[in-house]
Image (tube, rainbow, N blue to C red; front, side, top):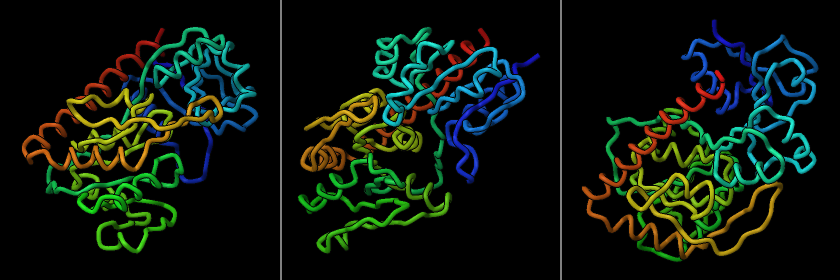
Length: 304
C-alpha cells in the first residue's frame, strides 16, 4: 500500500507550484497518493509524510507522522530557522543549503538536488541566438545581461522573456527583443531555438530556468556560485565570475558583471556549430542524469 503524502505550499490561485507538480508526478508514479494543502490552512487529513515546500506550517505539521522540509534559503525567513532541528528530514537542493541547515541543527539533512522540466523539442531548428528568461524575478541578473549587449555590439541577437516590462536602451532596439508573457508553446519554441542561454542568476533555490535551458540542449552561461555552478561544468557550459556578494535572508546573493557575461557569450558564439551542438547535448545528457538521480533518491528517502 502506498503512502499518503501531503505537499504544503502556497496556493497562489493559478495552480500548484512547479515544485509541487514535479513531486506529485514522482510520488504518484511510485504508487503513493499525493494531496496539496495551502500552508496557511488550519487542518488537513492525516498523512504519512508532509513536505513543507519552501514554507513552514506549524499547524499542519501535527497531522503528519513525518515532516520533511525542502527550503529555498533565499526566501526563508530568519525566524523560521528555529524550526529546522524539528524536521525528520531536510532535503537540500544545493550543497550550500545542506551545509547551512546542518550548521543550524538540522537532522537527517540530505543533498538531494531536485527535478527539472524537460522542454526538449527536436523539431525546432536551432539558431545562433541568445535567450534570457527573466520571468517576474529580480534575481536573474537581467540588468547585467542588458549591459553586456550595450557594451558589445558583436553579440548574437538576444530575446528576453519577461512577465514585467523591461527597459531596453534605444541602441539595442534592433538586437534585443522582449517577449512579454508568451504562451507556453511560444515560450518553449524560443527556448529550443536559441543555442545560447544566458542565466547569470543572483540567487536560486534550485535553478529551474537553468535546468530548462539544459533540457533543450542549450549552451548555458551562468554564475560561478552555488547552486548555479552545481549544474554547469566546462563540458556543457560557461561559468562567469562573481564581482560582489551580499546576504539576503539565509542565502548569499552573488553578482557578476556585464563584461564577464559578454566574454562568456562571445566564447560560446565562437564555437563552430557542431561543437556548440555537442556542448548543448552534453548539457541535456546531464539534465536527464540529474532527473533520474533525484527520482531514485526521493523514493528511497520518502519510503524509509
